[in-house]
Length: 524
Image (cartoon, rainbow, N blue to C red; front, side, top):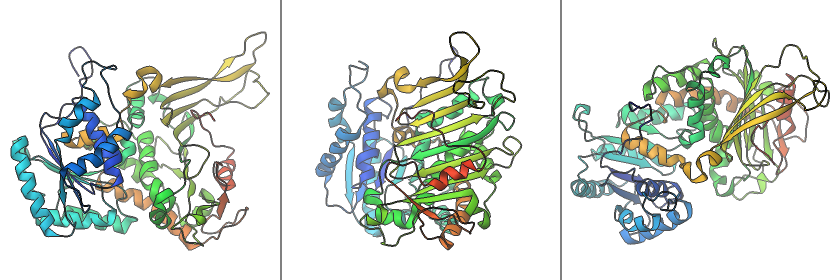
């Protein structure tokens, strides 16, 4: 903070050589390079830096740059002088940005690839005066992570100068999925730790880079009026929704083996839960923040196998088995809902309901905090309904913002009331272009060395400890049925139609305690 109380901007990182493995892939073209380009246009990158793309594709520097420019033109959050005359136009910035991009072709399991890469990095380190600052990004399929990490170690590219020098850092960003169950996650952690210290490892979940996700912490801990209500005395339950309107598309091969629990719950949904439920950290730094998130995961009560049938719901969109690459008799769930309990002083008795699915009615991510209803209804309500509970909704996407629902008097004689909402929308307040892409924030943080928004090894393993028993119960039984409910080790796999909000069992999961799913921000 400055002396005037204004928040100081994020510092510009030191000169760095960024190495992206999987540089010819979709993630690099659609997300990583557009994010770096926008950071460059906004002046958030150092005057000198370099990007080396490593892949098997037959590119040279020029064809690689042309390939990436197409992604920048389509996906970058371009900033033009009309919005801020101090910022260079995106088109004018391209030649300078393109000169930072280099390509190194090679197989990921070939030591020669890393010897060539080391020579290229040394040349660029000298040209860009990076002092040996290196950031590796694994944008490859996950089965290649151990191969690349081992080869980096063998080539001694994992080394960094002692922290006391303040220079010469080496860090590695690893994309999700980080393992596909607890044993594989532990094995991958062990393989990574054989080459890199935990302080060098940045496990990325792009949801944590979203401005609206970070705003949960600011909302809770930057305002005095809400945190006193953030507990079992005032909160009835919490709902977290991550809904997608598309099917599996080109990911059918991966998805049919993974399913919705591994694809979304273990990472995105549990991360959102921890930010909603955690205690205030002593300071906003990586250790304090991640310590509090870990405490939440440790407090989540694991579901016993016999509880999976009553505390979870699963579904599959009806046309899933017709997707190319999906097994004809696949029982992979494309939708899941569950009830989890956080067994600590703050949240004892407050259920957390999580749901996610594909080919649903809309693409929307929301967190609903529903407060308890008033103990005695004094005023008649519109429609003579029962007491209406207040709720607060955090809109993560697509209409980023917050909504608070409360009761107010209807105009006219009498004391009849109705529910109204008070909303805040980032786009209206700051402009649509003000919201950076999640990868912009996360890449910048990794270069600076701020791991606050990245997952730690123990976070990953604790998340799998919660998800694995549920997935195991599901794998043991349950063929698809048209409807109904069986108290077995797994809930039935129910079909649902495109554009629905999931199978009927998801509604029954809440109805058994007199609750229902809500969406506070989404308007059809």
